[in-house]
Every structure is written in structure tokens, then in C-alpha cells.
Length: 117
Image (cartoon, rainbow, N blue to C red):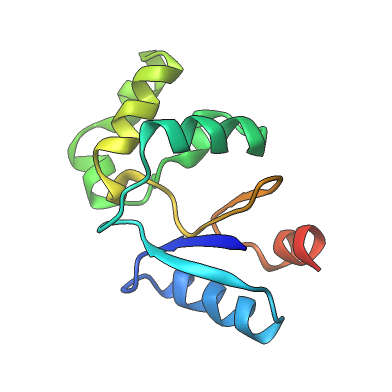
């Protein structure tokens, strides 16, 4: 079973959820705000995804801009960035789709089709 981490007020998350339903992909939904990913989860997901930790930040979010996270991403080590991500779900790029062997960050229909169907 895949975990689908989303924010219900996010239109991209709603679009991704509908795509999962339309394509018969089983998932359990988790609020990225109410059940923020832990540093341990994020560390595992970052490794599984093969992406740099910077790709897990919601760069278009208000909190990202207000806290000048852009500057922190350039200088902090990965473990501190992971802790920062774990401190607030609104910093995490969404949606996230997570399984044992696949972690997808953000919704790109072509990528999701290639990885999941």
C-alpha cells in the first residue's frame, strides 16, 4: 500500500488523488500538516527517491519565503535540512507518494504513469 501525503486545500494534491483513483492505484491518505513526516521518514524517503533533500522543499510556499529557507538550503548540511523539513509539513513539497521502492515528490502525470502503471 502506498502512502499519499497531501494537503487537502492544495489543488495539485486533489488532482493527484483523482489520478490515483482513476488509475486504480491503492493508497492510504495522510495529511502532511496534521501528520507531518518525521526526520527518520524523510531521511529514508530522500534516500529511496535518489533526489537531493532540496527537492523536498515546497519552494512556492509562504513559509518557505517568510523563513528565508532558500538561503538555509544553500548552507545547511542535509541532516539539518531534514530536521527543518520535519518541523513543519507546510515546508514539504506535496503531494508525496511513498512505497517501499518508490518515492514521488510533487505531481507530474507522465512520471507517475511511468513509475506506477
